[in-house]
Image 1 (tube, rainbow, N blue to C red):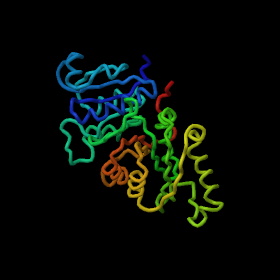
Image 2: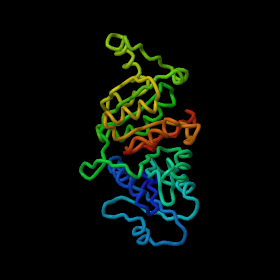
Image 3: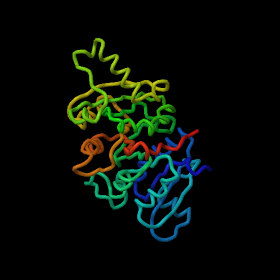
Image 4: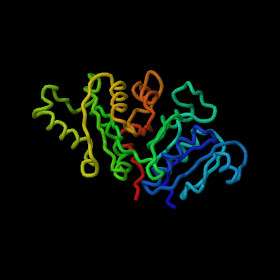
Length: 286
């Protein structure tokens, strides 16, 4: 087995952590990856004891390995992630405060991971198709800045396998206008010449790898980004949201992301925005 062909799935034995199992199993099947289950607890455990403790059925996971370690959970997950393509985990595990947006472990992981992290809330309900979760309508909010487009690499292989539609949502505000190198067209020009030209140029610039593979719906929105994204996701039944972000989750940072995690029950795929020279793309898949 190639060490970089894995989905890292932390399971602590809680029912919450098991909500990440189906998305992890599905992505692994779609991308032909192994699942690397990591269980972190004190004291020695046999593989049989681990399987019983984390409540999995090995027959549902034809390609997996189990690793047991002791120590700081977040640091161990981050260390193991160095040889993985994705981390898939629940926002809350054993001992997490349900009133908090995310548990301590999930927070540390998403803030420090150099690979994409798929976050799943405990109440997330994903629809199965042939025993797998296959996202059909993916929402990717962008603000026109180069960093926001880094989310593309995290999701492109998945959508190519599922033939999902991509809702690229450009949210234009005074703040994002300063970061963006794309100026939004005026509303009154949408039906005429400027909107078709602008949308084509926008997709060419920010989504070049998508154009030949999947159907893209581009929309332009103004106003509060969190409200616009949440409203759009509900109205269009998006079953996956993919976001590039700056890696700081709690106030005064990441207001938009925090509201999305709080309000939208579908899985959220996060990739941390880094300098281009440091940018680590997901490991290639077959």
